[in-house]
Length: 351
Ligand SMILES: Nc1nc2c(ncn2[C@@H]2O[C@H](COP(=O)(O)OP(=O)(O)O)[C@@H](O)[C@H]2O)c(=O)[nH]1
Ligand SMILES: [Mg+2]
Image (cartoon, rainbow, N blue to C red; front, top):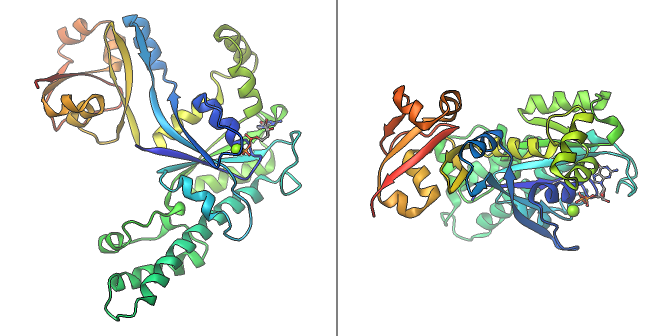
């Protein structure tokens, strides 16, 4: 299962965001928590309005909340282990004053951003060092793993230069040799700047700078106020609409976070529709029709015959599946068909 890990300094709003995304409040003092988050999608809403199904299910991603990252010299490694399996990171950066003092005594988002990334770098160095030590301490000159030494030294040199693993070019053979080592600085990040309500919509100088830094890294940056998001989430759907209109925003920032995280994990959505259920399914980009079938149920993959596919856009434009078929825009595809984001899929199978 693909997972997004939430990182950030203590008191930055990680758990608040985690709860907003997953609707789950982790018990106090737990080192980390894991839960599923719905990914709001207006296409699902429209399909649901069209089919009036008994059940509507949004796409989901798994999210891990991190507790206990402490700034300093690599002491975070143990805490970070809970998010090591994550394929992408949501990096929460505190920019609000708030009632609880910042653990470092002042609000400085760029400093915090650098501290967290430095911790990730130190954790990666520790990982390489442990592996290096183990191989070197093996008495045999040609013992197991000795062939990994050059690539490990190369990683270490790169990390010592304060560069993330994502920027280290590696040959296929080197990648092979590093298999089993999961680096934090290899994971893409979504930066979520947690602002004071009053600062929403403003662009202070530090934010401008942070945006430039994130652009250089190829990372998306979003701003929100977790506090406001929390208040919005406690309102009824009707009240939420009014509230969002007043703030002049289309949807809560957390919806955007969920969708960006989805994309960051390399996922697309395909849909199944009917009067029983309208549902969005998460599929790895590049996944085939048979992968999609397997996402729904292993039986569907095993007994896969063909899939009927139409696009969401065509369905909405023409108003019904029949109209799409009449226009010849529905496809009957085989197992190698690459599923596209927004495909409406019906699997024909036989078990
Ligand atoms: N004023 C304000 N307080 C916030 C905001 N986000 C979180 N907080 C508060 O900051 C404290 C720490 O939040 P929490 O989510 O537990 O941070 P974590 O340590 O990163 O998990 C809590 O008291 C939150 O209510 C925000 O946007 N504005
Ligand atoms: Mg927390």
